Length: 101
Image (cartoon, rainbow, N blue to C red):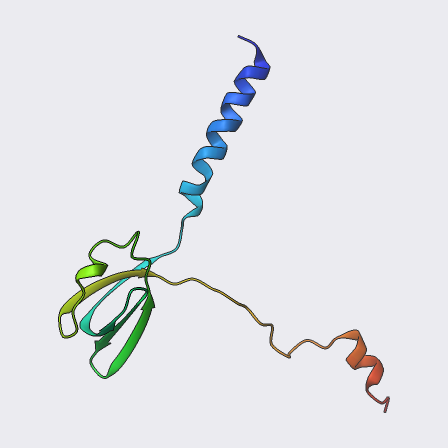
């Protein structure tokens, strides 16, 4: 068999399976009482704390049957949407602007 074909087959299979390994992230579970539920959001109360989740009704099974007051167990993954750097580092402009002692 031609080595180029073997390389293409291996590269193609790796490209198709990479998203499965990259899905990562630890999953968490929480049980609480439904406070409110709309088509895209879910609010659950556990003790004195209220948690709000964004849901995709097309992929989350049972989201259409959510009723206020019912007990649910939510499985979720935390994800970052934005990261801001702290002010611990000093930029070159700040160094130039500061007076010299």
